[in-house]
Every structure is written in structure tokens, then in C-alpha cells.
Image 1 (cartoon, one colour):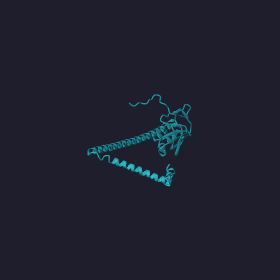
Image 2 (spheres, rainbow, N blue to C red):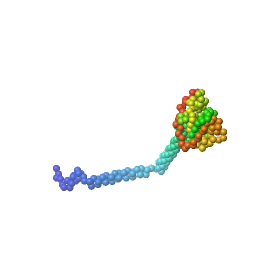
Image 3 (cartoon, rainbow, N blue to C red):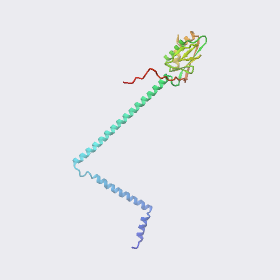
Length: 245
């Protein structure tokens, strides 16, 4: 067995237990070696076309140009698809918003939901005589003509397009089969000034109630009214939806 020397012992110790500086130097050498290999590989690739004929180079260039053009066409098509999808999404959103608004309006007109807004409160009190059916019908009709959006009698009777007023057999007036109690308190949502004006013209509902029926009428213009009564939706018996051809 050969005799060990101090230099050899130091080399063996360094290999067994390298210092931090030695590790850093080793890492740098590894990086430099990898860079040299990559550079040689790049040089090899750069010289790949050096031996090709001019015609071959033209064909390769045309092929690459065609690939680029196809990529551009695909990008343009995808952009058109994206724009179309965004347009469709916008149209669907607008249609949905319009449908929801239409449903909200129809629910109010049909009396299916509580509503709030400015309007007037009309109180008809029978003093010297009884308010006639015709006078109340005229009052409701004038309110509708003045764009009343919701009408309610006595905090619980919602008036809608299908509502019917009748003389009660026992006296008084019925609304949709329900006896109305006096005084008649009528809450109406709409433009307060327009609604009030619809009742006060000459020979109008207020004059008819006061001069011919012997009742007193008080009208308040209010910034906010709440109508909480609702109608129960009725399912059509005879009418059916027409299916589009």
C-alpha cells in the first residue's frame, strides 16, 4: 500500500468534507459547463440550414410564413368569437332586465305585490246621505284616467282591472263581493297633483258626492303611501295560451 502524502490527504479530506467555498466554486463550474454545452448546441442548430440549397430555404421560409398566417387567422377568429359571446351576453342581460321589469309592472297592475310611492288619500264620509255606487265608480274611473298605479279601499281591498262594484243587498256597496264599510278611505299611488286634479273639476266626482249624495270628501296629497293588500292570482278557466306556429 503506497504511503500517503500531506497533499493527497488534504485532497481526500476536501472530497469527503468540502467547505462552503469549495461548494460555491463547484456550483459555478457546473453552471459554466452547462452554459458551454447549450452554446455548442445552439451553434449546431444555427448551422443546421447552412448546407441547404436556396430552393430548400425558400420552401422552409414559405412554410413558416404559412404557419404564422394560420396563427394570425386563428387569433382573428377567436377574437370574433369572443366579441360575439360578449355581445350575446349583453343582449341576454338586457333581455333579462327587460323581462324582470315587465314582470314587476304586471305584478303591480294585477295587485299581486305590496307597493309604495307618492299619491293621495281620499276619505268619503257619509253625512247627510249615502254615497252612491255610480259616484264611487266615477271616482275610481277618473283616478284610473289620471294614471293611478294602485288603488286600495279601507286598507284591505285592492282594486284591479277585474274588480267589480255592486250594491249590497243589505245596503251599502260591495267590492268584489266584499262589503265596504264607511267611511270609505281610498289610497291611490300616482302623481299626487294629477290625481287630485282628476277629482276636483266641475261636475266631477267630488262635486257629485258632496252636492248630490250628501257626503263629505277630504283629499290629502302625500309624499309616500304604502298599499299592502294583495290579490290572489286566479287561474284562467277557459283561456289558453296560443302556441307560436
